Image (cartoon, rainbow, N blue to C red; front, side, top):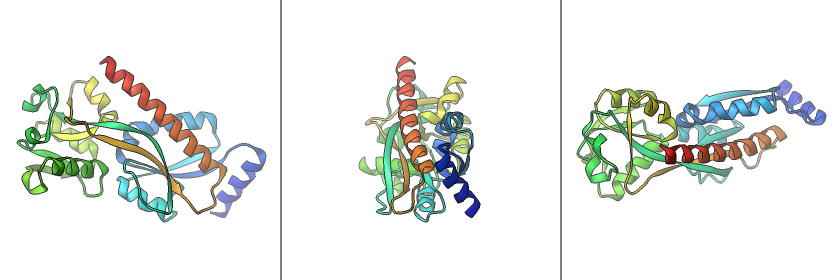
Length: 237
C-alpha cells in the first residue's frame, strides 16, 4: 500500500529499516530454516514486519515473479529471466521411515532397493517430489514402476505416515532433526547422494528497496551459516 511504501522510504532516510516485508517460503524452509532467520532479522531490525506466505517452491516462485511477494526462499534453481537468484547453500535429502521398517537397517539406499517398497510422495509442484522423480528416472524407474502409498501436501503428513510404517518418504535433513532426536524416524542417506538447493529469489526489474536488499543479504548469509552448523552436527552424530 501507499502507507507501507511511504514508511519504507521514510525509514531509509532516517537510516532505520522499517515497514512490511512480504516473504514467500517453501514448506521445508518454513519448517526449519525460517524461524532462525526471522528471529535473527527481528533482533537487528525490530521495526520490520515480516509477512510470510508458505507454499511449495513452484508456487512461491510464481508469486515472486508476479510481484505479489517481495522475496522468496525456495528449493529449486529458477531459470525465470525476470528473477534474480542467490544460492544460499544446499541440504541433503534423506530417506525417512519408521525404525521398524525393513529399510531402516540399511546404511545407504539406492533407487532399485527403494523401488521395492511403498513411497509416500509429495504433491505436484513440490521441489522434493521433482528431485525424487528425477532420481528414480535416472536409475531407470518411471512413475509407473513405483508403488505410491500416498501423495501428500505437507511434510508433517509424510512424516506421520512414515512413522506409522506405511512406507518411506524423502525429506530434507534439516526438516527431520526433531523427529530423529525423538527417535520417531530413521534417516538413511541416498546412494548416490541427492541434494536440494536453498535459493533466495527476488524480482530483477522492480524498484528494490534497501529493506529487500538487506533481507536478501541476511537470508543468504544466515542460511549458509545454518547449513555449516547442521553439517557439523551431522558429522558429530
